[in-house]
Image 1 (cartoon, rainbow, N blue to C red):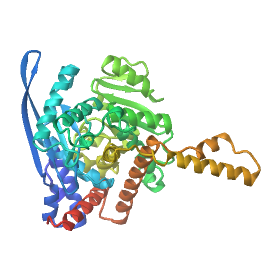
Image 2 (cartoon, rainbow, N blue to C red):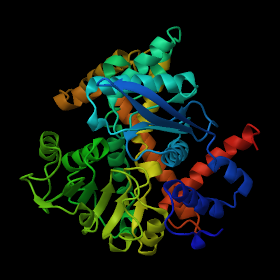
Image 3 (cartoon, one colour):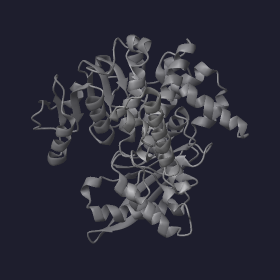
Image 4 (cartoon, rainbow, N blue to C red):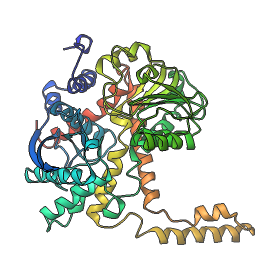
Length: 475
């Protein structure tokens, strides 16, 4: 079926598949191998009891594996009342494409538990998480070598630590048990930089976009990120760090922040740290003194801005509000924030979209670093840091000998400093995001059939995955 005749009102999974179909049409990829790639390899549904406050409660969770062309399969676990099988299947597919785009050798997976975590205490959530972990591990959906979860909506370092500890007790002889999950606390095998990785990845990708002057011009902008007006929807982990870094380090202005209870608007820019403190103390943005409160946050999505960053849940931009979006560039920090129908409308209006399969890939990039670190059992930089410092001191000494002048302190400090693990993680993340966007822009510009960055991204992903399928003889 041509994408021009696709029906409206699509489910999230259908929306993802149809966006991939656009790339398949452009590539002339064999339809049979395209269908093989799009299919979910396996889906597990578990229902289990946990005794809460003296009463037995039943919980239902899922873990979908989209592709095993690379192992392990990788993807987060979310705790939310929106979770269902179709959602985790769609998110698992996105993970496969995402990993291919940023050259991370993982297949795609995703999991979720139907639960409102706000209704349970810490100890109750720990019991629930440990039981869910046992269900996944015993059924082969949790392992350092085959399926590795990470944090997602409603989960974080705490839950990942519980998962890792439960797996360790289930399989005490597995030397690599700590690699069964990523996004752990640093003290329990995590890696510095993972918490803010997705938000940092958004920043690095936007920085790279603004290095491409023709692309910026085509998006009806000029210059750099400095002074650009940005609206952020969702000030959770991803939205918070993206907004914080873009405003504090790049000089962008966060003119509006949308949350569940409304939005805060300030044309002069919102102080993100202060707003975050307010949300933590009050549960929402209402009452924040650093801007004007708007009860209907959905209207704020349609405000004029240079860059719109949807960083909450999927399908927030749909065919009803897409005609009213006034952003020049949309950076999809969330998974699937723009529906298939909305995407067509935005393209027809020449509103540029940097796709989710790229923009929120920072988390899986750093998760890959954490997984490698866990398997090697050594922190990055431990072997070479002091050696690099020694070489730096030699360079400083040589400069003094050659010039007969003292080297300024700030130059000495930079030259004679060996990179620690945090430096290397940030460097690797920056490189991964920059190269991925460069490939997408190049693919988009080389093929006149490719109308947008999303299609270019999926062309890259499908090319890599299909080549892998052919090489190993699956098809």
